Length: 168
Image (cartoon, rainbow, N blue to C red; front, side, top):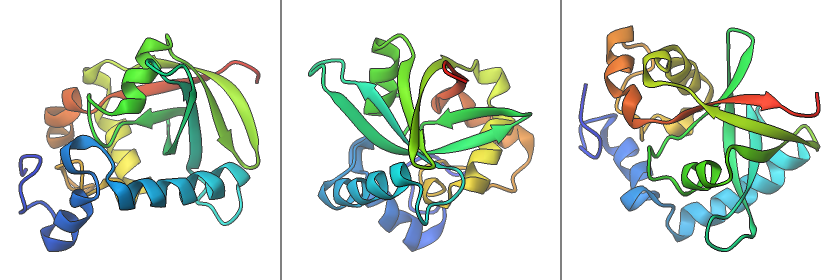
């Protein structure tokens, strides 16, 4: 397993993709790409089945913040994973909002409540997430085919949230 930020994890292409999110935040190009993903994923057109848009109230601005996410289905339950770790803005906003958010996918939106999953239960969810979200692979320093112990070792650094659908 390679530590986060090292160029050895995934080679030059992964290093280039990590540059889009230098210091754990999207740069200008990544923000532009995210805006396009938000439009596409919310509409549900030509989107991967796992693609969605998370809308959460900004902890400082109070405005609705939208971010493209991948929904990882494990054991009949849906989860969100922070590919950028603990300091991702959306994670901090979800925590400040008490877990309340809206998830948009397939052309509609649903109110959800996000509950943080304890690190001891994150490994299978992280594995599934990396299967579904190839764009996240450069940011999580474990190969998607690695043994469970490798996922357990990085699990405390990557928040995972169980999605509870409020209006289902």
